[in-house]
Structure formats: C-alpha cells, structure tokens
Image (tube, rainbow, N blue to C red; front, top):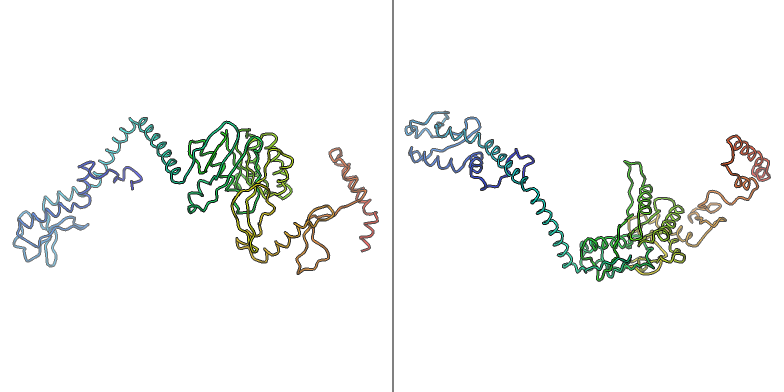
Length: 461
C-alpha cells in the first residue's frame, strides 16, 4: 500500500531508479555488501572465524577471537574488548556505516523529487488523462452491463414516446443476481393511457415493495441504455422517476417519520407530470388509520385526476381498492398467497384483483411474537372482520374471554348523544363569538346541564 504522505517514501517501484534501489539496499543493512566485505577480510587476513556484525551502540564492527589475535592486520582499529574476542573497525567499514545511516533519508528525498517531477508531467497532460479516464470508465460500465445481460438473460428494451409499460417476466436486477438461480419469481407489469394507476395489495413480506421497485429500476436501466432483466420490455420514456418508499425520520431537522413521508409525498404531487413514473409504498401508515386511509385515498385521486401519470401504489388499506369502481384509470393487483394447514405460503406472484387479507398476524408469528399475543390478535381480528359495530357504526373490541367486564370495550370514547344543548353547541359558530360571549355561553350551558333531568338521575345513582 502507498504511504499516506509522499514524504514517507516507499511508493517508487523497485527497478524504476537505480539510485533509489541502492539507497534502499543500504538502508536495510546492505546484506550483500556485508557478505562480500566479510569474505574479502577473511581471505586477506587468513582468519576463518572473522565476522562482521552490528549493534546499535557501536555500529558495524569486525570481531576476531583471541586465538587469532596475532593475525590481526595493521589497519584494523580496536573498538571493544570482550572476554574471548576483540572487535575492530576499519576506515572502509566506517565509511559504509555513514552511508547506511543517511541512506533512508536520502532515499525518501530522492523519491519525493521523482514524485514531484511525475506530478508536474501528469499535470501537463491533465486534460488528456481525464478524457482517457472518462472513456475507460464509460467503457468499463458498458462492458459490465453487457456481460451482466449475457450472463443473466436480459432483453433489449423498446423505448416509446407513449406513457406505457409492458414488462413480461420482469425481475428485480439486484435480487435476481443475489438469490440462487431460479429462485426469484418473475412478474408482469402492464400500464397504458387507459390503465395507468396500479393499486397493489397483499400480505406483508409477499413482495409488493419489491415489485414496484423493480419496475422503477427497469425503467431507469432502459433509459440509461442498458438491457433489462425481463423476457420483453416496452417502456414509455419517463421525464422523472419518483419514489416514496421506506420509513425513516430526520431527527436533526426535527422531522418525524410521518412528516418526512408527507414532505416527500408533497414534492411528488407538486412536481410530477403526465410523463413521470411514480412509485408509492404504504402512504399514510405513519399516522392513525382513519387519517392514513383518507390521505392515501386523496393522493390516489389527485394522481389520477390532476396528473394522470403512471403510478404503482402499494398499500395495506384495502378500502382503496374500491377506487377501481370510480376511477377509470385504476386497476387492482394483489400478491397471491395460499393457505395450507393454518399456514400461509407466499407465492410472490402478482395477479389481478384486490387482496382481502394482510396476514399481519401470521408475519408476527414468523417474527417470534409470543403465542399469547398472536392468539389475542386473532380474536380481535375476527371481531373486527365480523363487523361488530357500535351505535355510530364504528368497530368495537370485546374483552378477552378470560375476563368478564360488564360491557364491551369500544374503540370510541363517547356514545351517541341526543340533547338540545349538544345541538346548540353544534350550531354555534365560534368564529363569530368574542371571548366574553364564549365564556357566557359556556356558563349558560353548564347551568342548563346541571338542571337537566339526566343530571339529576346521575346524581341519584
């Protein structure tokens, strides 16, 4: 790996510069030179046990045992006396030591000099280098797409001006490549000027989000010039692709998950055109059920009536499937499942029609939610689906079977009220009252309620 700074050295390849190679050899101890020098001294002195060593205190030295003391050459300079040997230096060895000590700094300085020259040369050809790099990058990307298309069986898409979609046996490009061969279930997607808004319902984990995302990805791939993972693809050119998927907040900006969702939805509704492609996943799930259904319903109507663009809308709000009856461009799709021995099998196949269940309790069981919670959930679900309604036609939930309350627990806080004071309150326009008039009316209503027969009956109880 290259060093973090050019001043650290070590980035010039061995063999590129002879001077740097020599300095590096010196800096690492010059083993070859030391071996040659030792052999030379052994031959000249006729001392076979002579050896050249090194330590951090004395540097390089020549060590001779006491048995050969008489053979010591005259030019050897005594450096240290040991119990059984003597250590010497020579002018030649001292000169070499000085080279070794400074070799590392010299090598780094020479490398930096070469680096600066290379940088200046590269800068003088910057424009040509950038053009070459850009061309290589484009070639690399195109070759990668071509190789992927060949290996994965992609088809050549047909791009048209009309706002249409015809995808046969389409696959998600990422999951198709990562899952084992043949495991990903391909799906069709068809939309045109008369049937441009697809509402997709179905169970959790069945593949709704994957389906709408793969349509957006295939459209993007086709418009950038790539083949796409499908048997056939006819795609109308989209001026923009909008996606509102996933759920996340932005704490640093003080925005909740629902606020982020609505901000992104607003951007889509304000900027999409008839030529756009919009994918929306679970709009309205970040708030209460009634608010969520209402917002999702209104968004669908606006996209259908005001914009008229190709839209894939995945939702668990089954109430929205009724829009097919009132909006001509809406078509219902759902993800097929099969129930078998109190279990659910996800087929991951998109079929016409609306789903009637979300199988959320089944998914909760797969996730490891305690059995007691799942069983209670089944009881409440059965009651809600059986349309157990209160006086205001809103669902109410019965208490658990092992409890014996005096009455059902309702989802509503108050029952229906029929009282002249209530009628008077409803008829009051608070915008037309001054603060003093409002306080006077509240005081009057309190007085009237205290004198009413109902109030007297409650006091008696």
